[in-house]
Image (cartoon, rainbow, N blue to C red; front, side, top):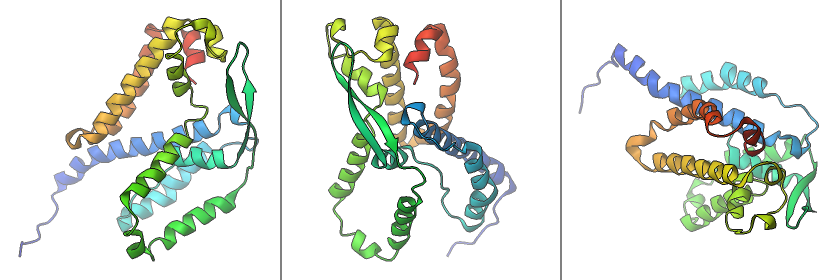
Length: 241
């Protein structure tokens, strides 16, 4: 039996460094999720409460989690988008010059029932853990794959990636950015986004680098500022949705 040793005081400061990264990651997840969900083209009528969400988490939720040793809770982008899509009515719109896209026509707002049911099911899952262990991993991966693919609709990165497969520019679907941004600027911007995405993915897969992942997310802010030196501000206005 080992002897329990008191936790050294310097360990508190040491733990604060990765905790700072986790804090920043939670902040980014919360704000990115709310900003994406409340985009103008989603036509939501009820005003968002970005700072109120963070205030409730910072003042009540996170202190309780710290004292009880519970995992932190924050918004998760993909489930938020899937929830929004499930409450949305979309219609197919024909673009000028050919091609189609989908646009939100209506969203059922104030749907607290679905959120309540979702979290009640999560709570009930604690009672049926032995049954959940019988679910094949392939089924769970399929659910996550569906969530990821389902959130692609309306994502401009994937729309611009599809444009790379069209060799004749005049055949491009007439999105707003294809009419206002040059081909080189658009494709180079898309390629840069893909490189950043690959770096983020690799960092999450390598254990020795995963602890740095939140700090790289924070580094994307000055990287975005630096992009003004390589792309015109007017181009970024249309490309950076």
